[in-house]
Length: 93
Image (cartoon, rainbow, N blue to C red; front, side, top):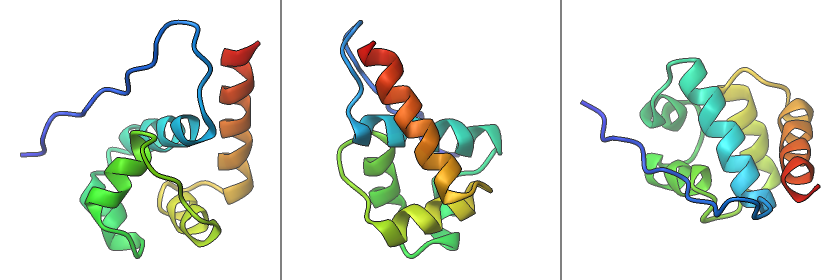
């Protein structure tokens, strides 16, 4: 049985950092597809622990990782990044 999700805690009105927005979009998409961290681990060259840190906005991901993660959640890398940009702008507006 998977462990419960660690919530992403962001104070009300605080802008999302790009790392937080990326993690939030990735997590939402993964859950919408009913995928586990281990499912992503098997499709990428990243550990489930590292993917978890990415989802919580605690670590950055490089270009190769963005491509692998986007493909594993059935998105184009550009679409994933566009959603991240929207999230950072929405909160800071």
